[in-house]
Each structure stands twice: as structure tokens, then as C-alpha cells.
Length: 114
Ligand code: 5GP
Ligand code: ZN
Image 1 (tube, helix red, strand yellow):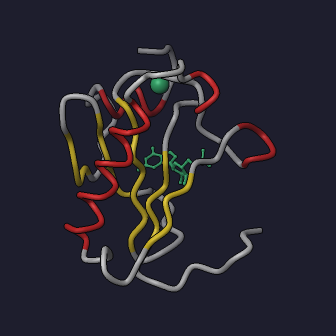
Image 2 (image 1 turned 90 degrees about the vertical axis):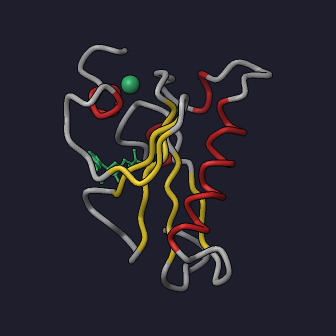
């Protein structure tokens, strides 16, 4: 657990969150500031600062994508479609330095993003 990391604190149950999925490695919860009817943040329970901190061959990214697949089915957006987004670093718009993906759906997602 990284000190003062808000997502580590959510993973540890120290900060409440509206959890929609959990397994041994992954936690997913509704974004506090949703940008779509379905907006879920998917995190590994282990702290990585960003996708750039993930060692080659680490299973964490596959686990996140599998969780996204299951959550999309549960949330009823698997058929209509969704967007799975990772913001990395300052120019990528990452504001929380704990690796996470956004699962967004329930409306048409514009392209290109801003
Ligand atoms: P980023 O901008 O780093 O890609 O995404 C961070 C996301 O985490 C933002 O969409 C923000 O609304 C969400 N977020 C930040 N703090 C909290 C929190 O304490 N609880 C929840 N549920 N979401 C949070
Ligand atoms: Zn963390």
C-alpha cells in the first residue's frame, strides 16, 4: 500500500466506495464524478503508479480487462458497447497516481476525445 494513495485506501476499505466488482486482485467501483450513465473505475489492489510501472509479463492488465468484460455484462452495456480508458501521466489526464482504467458506457462515446 502506497502512503496517501486514495485508491490504495479504497482497496483497503479505509475510504468507502460503491463497489461493483471484487476478486483477489481487482476492485471496481463507481466513479465519484461520473462522465457517463455507467462510469466505473477498475483498479488492481496492488499499487502501480501508472501503466508505465507495470513490469513486462505481469498479469495485471489482463486481469483488469477480464474484470471489465464481466462488469460490462453485469451493467448491461456489453451489447451496446462501451469504452475502456487508461489515462497515463500528466498529458494523459491521470489525476490519481494508482493504475486504473475507466469503464464508460450507457451513452454514445464521442471520438476523438478532448
Ligand atoms: P484519472 O483522472 O486519474 O484518470 O481518474 C481518476 C478518477 O477517479 C476520476 O474520474 C475521479 O472522479 C475518480 N475519483 C477520484 N477520487 C475518488 C474517490 O474518492 N472515489 C471515487 N469513487 N472516485 C474517485
Ligand atoms: Zn495506490
